[in-house]
Image (tube, rainbow, N blue to C red):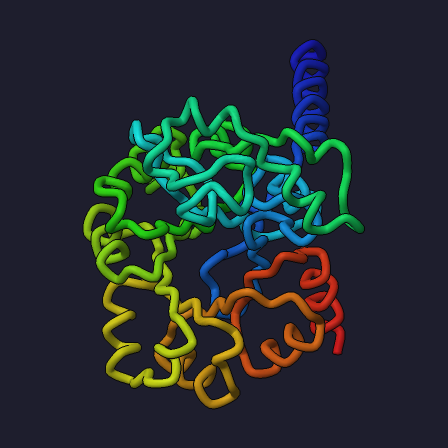
Length: 296
């Protein structure tokens, strides 16, 4: 009996120790799709501080307690999904030309960090030089279930089969259905067709319709009701928002995550109007604004 009690105490201690040392991830906190929750989406990672769409940029965003890291997807000549905003290599690497015309092996030879040091000398760091373009697989391998992912299908018309490849990767990493919390992965796109396809393939995978400023100018209640048939939210250009259209979008039960909000004044104004999160290059600043906003 005494041995059993000692064993129980040892197991309890080990359990408590395990609980104490296990990192508390963004993925473990609350209902990500609650309209009462204000989400910090790290736009291309912590891209105000670190070269965008690099593993280091995502690691920095995680340290800043962002709710989501944002991934933009492109596809290589040999059909591999990589994380990069532009369709061309020129801006964020020392390569040139279209992503679709280069193999993954070609792209892996490129420097995806030195451009940042040249563009932002006040933020330059030696370790940024030589950073690599990550694949979707590499990001999911690195963070697994210890991150929440806000993934954009970029120009899907250029990349047939992108949606199927994306879903296959999410399934492989057990980030879909019963294996993951609802909302741990969100899919966004300017392409309605891409989002409808995702919704048909994986009805439980939340999608968000991105909107350009000109689309917001002509937005109607009927348009928002149509979006609601395949998406849980809208992601408009923040410069196109005002108190009235924020209220209009929210009245349809849609989440509202505008892009890309980088100043405290804009963040506070949007919170006053009723957005449910923002995309920002500075997740630490928005985290600070949220904290102060809750106090006031």
